Amino acid sequence: HMFARYAYQEIEVAPGIVVQPGQTIGLLLGMANHDPRAFADPLAFRPDRADQKNVSFGAGIHFCIGAPLARLELQVSLKTLFERHPKLHLAEEARFRDTY
Image 1 (cartoon, helix red, strand yellow):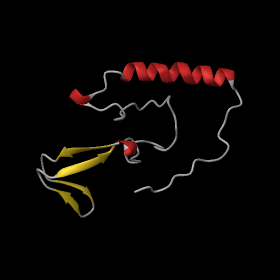
Image 2 (cartoon, rainbow, N blue to C red):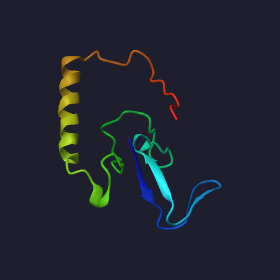
Image 3 (cartoon, one colour):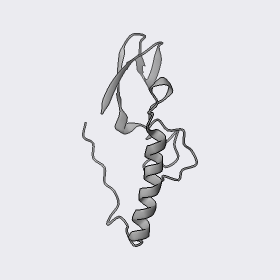
């Protein structure tokens, strides 16, 4: 999923890449929370992370009203899944590919 926002001020988003006020920025929701400078081990699935400063559910006035329900569903469903299948594990390490 991709969405767009407008820059309010000049900002350097990467070395040598400067976005000017008024320019449109495309944001990929699937890459949210993947910055290793902000999140320890960002590719690891750890629903018990102490650091909950993620943007999975948006922020500010755009924050998802269903976030508490989604978190509760995750806690209940994972607990049930692992109780019923205690030996469940990944068959191999996850492989990622560049699709863009």
